[in-house]
Image (cartoon, rainbow, N blue to C red; front, side, top):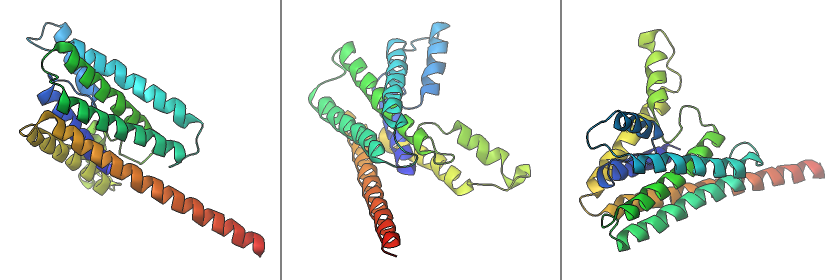
Amino acid sequence: MLVLTFSTGVIDAVGYLGLDRVFTGNMTGNVVLLGMAFAGGADLPILRPALALVFFMLGAALAGRVLRKGPEGWSGRTSSTLLTVTLGLAALTVYVALVDVHAEEILGSITTSALALVMGIQAATAKRLKVAEITTVVVTSTITGLASDSRLAGGKSPFWARRFLAIALIMAGAVVGALALHLALWVGIAVSALLSGVVTLLGHVRHRRDLGEQAASVEETALR
């Protein structure tokens, strides 16, 4: 989940800096942008942030429907939703590499909407996995928890390392995404696709190994 948090930083940097100031992972940013745009904010985009918000919710809804019937924790359904994210990002990498998405407004809107769709799937999957303090797409609550539960605030600093890493990694991802734009728009998306693929593979392998150990344990108990 920390790797996916880094990946979100990359994608949001690509969307905001390379695709007309659109957050495709952090929907709080889009809601705020839309509010300012509706109030007459100068040169603030409306269409792409609005579409990103809609498609993010659609992706989250689709993933939620797939995962709802699955067991708690990682399952085959988890692997399938994260594989969908990986394949979606890979397809977008090829699309952006071959098509000049800045040539026409609709091409850029398709890109940001599709990115938001896959990020919605990722966010819903992370929510289902219930890794404390890591949502992969936003760190405001993580920052709040890090500060309010700190020893400075009289707390015991639970999950401080995990919280700090989530904040640091989404920032590091944004740095990488911004730097990738100096090479090409598709590079940052490709980095995120690769990271999602690695997470999917490692998670699925670990899941299959755990299933094998459980089956062996049951068989051993039955033989006794």
